[in-house]
Length: 255
Image (cartoon, rainbow, N blue to C red; front, side, top):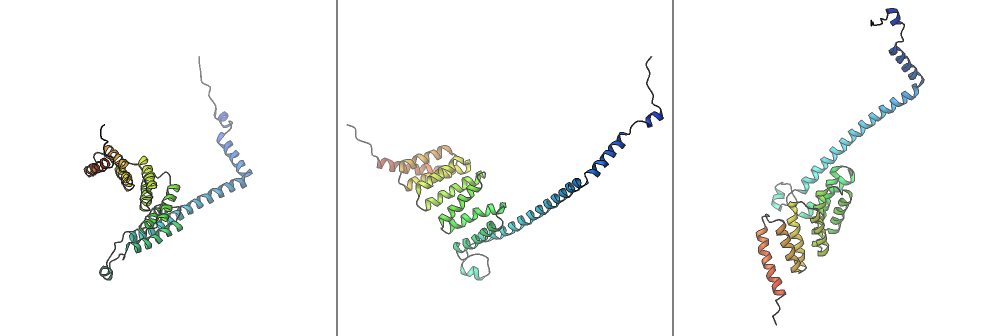
């Protein structure tokens, strides 16, 4: 017959108390390693305090940068006013040159004082735009290329800035260079921007009087984006170019 062994109260009390034993070991460890534990706790506390201060400082810097950005954008978007409007107290500028100069100084300040923030990243773009508006094309080019170098993962701006670099080169009369920038952008482009890039490339070929290549590029654009609103206008322009190409290369008489 099976039976269960029973422990008496006396036997049970004589068993080692594991909790008490563990507690005693813990106390002994703490006593033996008091300096080490104190150092670890102090280090952890310092880390938490430092992390909190960094977080607060980062938030303050970001807020200051955004405040300055709001001021800069307000200046950048102010209208050009005539003398009568300015005399009446309206906020604006006498010329685009004045507007770009004033805005440029604010955007530069953002980059100088808050260079590691996203606000400074956006300011770099406006610096390039201001230089472009002032006709300082090389400085605009430097600003855009610096952005492309610093932020290669910003795919949308990679497309837009390469297109802007194309506009700069085109304004400088560097048509082959402009075509190169437009073609780089076209390789990365989204459908909404692709049609315009085809038109930009074709326009440069026209300026070079390379009618045949302009014609090819326009046809490629129409074929790739047949639903674009301006397609009908481009088709009409294609017919005009075809007439130019035909007159430039008249058919040879048969023998």
